[in-house]
Image (cartoon, rainbow, N blue to C red; front, side, top):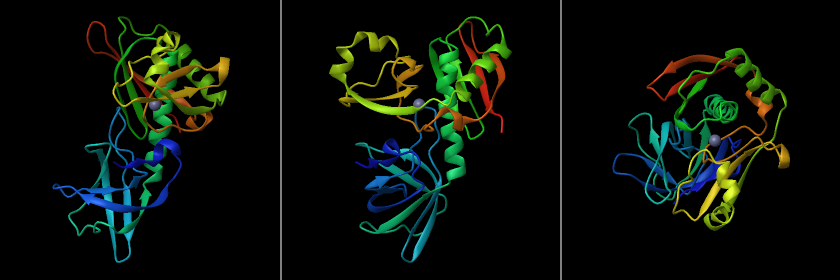
Length: 239
Ligand SMILES: [Zn+2]
């Protein structure tokens, strides 16, 4: 398994680690990773690995077996051997844009309280698919609501609960827009706002900004009809 460092602190851009394995496809496994692996609609991180006598560009990261994270080199070059201490560095501009868009999509799911059936995160924009029959009536009103949540600069935090706590707290389940993954024993919740002023609380393993103000201005893009009960809503970072 790989320690998922980005879960505890999404703002770590550089960190050391030790190589614990190679995959048959030429991937690298570290004991701890600041690289987020592709999942939940968020792309894997890119960046570099460097060590004494070598360096390698990392194109992306993916999930492996047993909670491991596999770094995928951008070019076929010699890999650092197992046991080598390496320095991992993120393409921070790209990752930070993912964090802003990802958090913005949580806010979109608050402004449009419908079931979410899919989503995708990019560096400048993202989208969610909603289980809704009609397009939102007033785009300007929707956009104003999103930007008001950004302007209020709410705290974004993560907490862990056990499956048993979730089961013992059915009212909490109602606030969850998706059923949490079962079997891991613990579930990570991401909260936007604090206490009674919480606007969103849902299971999520992705990376988020620490305060909604970091998202900056938002603009609603295309709204597409993708089936009788499906509206695809695009959201853009506007600066
Ligand atoms: Zn999230």
